[in-house]
Length: 260
Image (cartoon, rainbow, N blue to C red; front, top):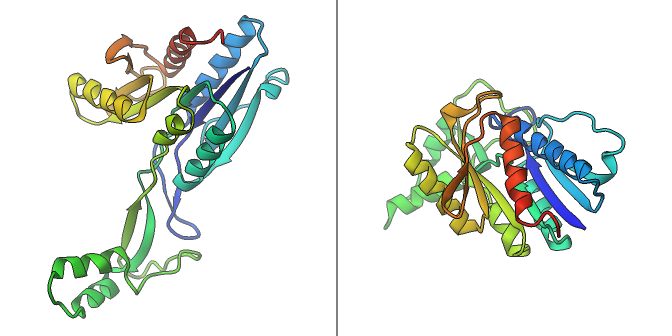
């Protein structure tokens, strides 16, 4: 039995009861990867596989054929923390053979929201002694005067958002399942190709990615989405278009163990 996991969409971090921080990811590439995998196994007349599809509420989805549904578990997630826990639980309980981690996960989540005026007053009232910078930093990381995040924040004052880093999800995958074939993704802006390849290889080295799809922000699009599929430090394909990218990923992935 082959166990396959895909993450798709962009996470959404709550600011208050009605506002969120999110990103531009549509989840379409992840969906095309799912469709391509289903088509691959159908063409091979194989039923010895199962896909866990982790998706955010804004991620593109459409109905699957009733013959395909038994092969897919859909797992909804919301923010970066929920993705972290879902991936941790999955990779600890299931020997995942292939993992396509295409989800755009926020690097930051909300720590607090404070009025600019109230935060300035709090900093101004500090009893400075010793390392003043450290004292100010403590307030900036954890101010006493902050808004409740359960209701709508008033709009009659300027505000400051305090953000903290989220836990990285991608290192979990190989840490929990060392034998997983991991496909990572890297998106950069305004960099030459050589730098994009270097950063993609760095991502692979740090997180055990067996393959990375790398592209530049200006190359995003539905039909003209460009990028490079990188394996072992070398560009192995340059597909154009999201569907073609998904097909290239699955094709290269299945070369590495689709007959397990």
